[in-house]
Image (cartoon, rainbow, N blue to C red; front, side, top):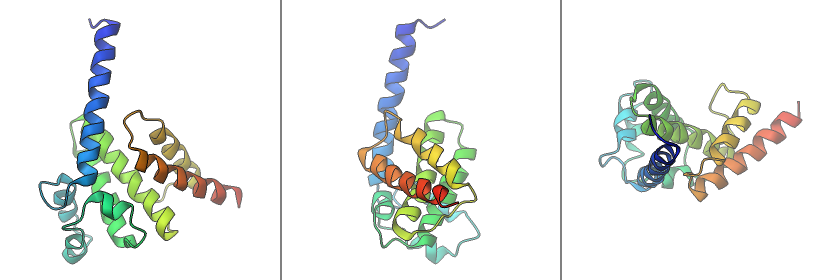
Length: 158
């Protein structure tokens, strides 16, 4: 049985690993060795030219660029969603969940579109949980915060 110190050390190592892996996923030029790009290429509902439009760009470039298309963000969202269900690794699922929500947040913030069936209330809750993660990057915290503001204003209009 693990002691409290061992559990704390394991948690810290997992969080450090998540920080490093998230930064790598955000800055890696696609396709490279990008699992996200490879997964997106397998999604048959999108034309391959749409997927190829993501090549030679980093995920960070697409997520934080107001000129990224809704279709590009949908592809990233769907690839993230697929990775959340296909990965055996808890760390990879956490990264995929983050990427999934980042694409939704980006589309809300930069395009004014909601690319999910989730309610604004549910999205607000999800973004709030992600913001609280100690391994979340500052850029994503800002994106999720902006998306939360939009979700809250949409909820208040009802």
